[in-house]
Length: 552
Figure (tube, rainbow, N blue to C red):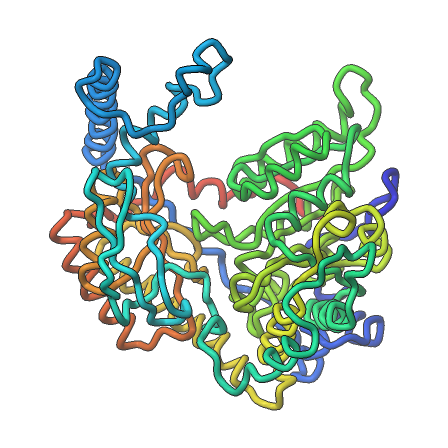
């Protein structure tokens, strides 16, 4: 992929990945990882269960009242804007200075309508400051507003021991200092906090090299490169891989960093329906048959962009079928494992291990260290020639400051912990505990009658709230009960699909989860949130396609 006109990876089909894995075990790859471990256990892991994803529709009356609520909020918003324009109500929003009244306005009035009149009414549910490590329990700084959420002031009171159901601390490795973090302290004393240079100049440390070798070993690939910011890992590296004359096929629910990277690349972008293999195959077939618009030349490269776990939907990519299509149509596959690395798979190695596929089936691995590893930054991994190409052409390598040494050591410590290189099996136990907690939490919510989205194995659990007033009431009431949750609404979700997003952690005890579930049961009755009728929606049809050939 380093070559802009390069060829595709070796051909194959979905049904021969067992043979590929067997040949890999016979000596084609000597690095540690899922393949070597599978060989030691006597048999490889393959995901042979059906992929269970839930996207239940809300009852009609819920959708009617949801849109009605937004409609009434919009009408009152226009009325309040009228009062502000007349000087009857004070306007706290950003406005142009009087001396710039003849300038083209920086702040478009209507573009801020939603923020000014709807979001501001429930703004207290976001950006809540915490003052402790984001472990299973954390402390929240209490704040109040005297002007309807335009500004806040702190009361000085600390809300202690709030159950943390919102942080991406999947394995519980983002915690307060203990003796296991002594190596991080030692690195801080030896290297300091910052590098003050880019990787291209004087910012490549031995710690970065150690981490990159460890990431490659963990993923069972040839090489890896690490970056100081997860978002920039996508947005600054995709433009180095594709450009004008290339085609990007992007899942409609991809993260903003993938979307930005695709747009910055200058490549043609086409969107396929979420996890919909028929939609993806149609785009691939058309791309191969018709080529580039107008000139009809073949695309230089076709790159499929997907995520491992989609953080707003809790769904897991249908990787086996995407790999089959990728091989069939000679496309490249770029997978963002920001939420799946460390959180799924028998040993936490992500969706490739989860489905028992060959790591060589994926051309570009991307992931972040901000979730399961309790740190920050990201990585790109794959073939050595790919990584060597990015070392030269990546915008992050050329212009961004290198990863902080203590952060690199925290990632090394966490990764060795997960791999068992610390001499214990505690890392593997946490991966298994996370899977147990996830299944338990999702099963109980289903039994209570809530509508939840996503895969039954995904630790990201969206619970649908729909109505904007219930979004605010839900978060406020739970904080009063010392439970911290993240609520999400438009524009991060579709207008009528506001939700609470729970993140399950291995650090959560059964007692904590039962406390949360008991309170959710009460809140579901109080706010009438138990909408589930256990009826399939139209969206799961996206996962049931069988009308395309898996074999070449």
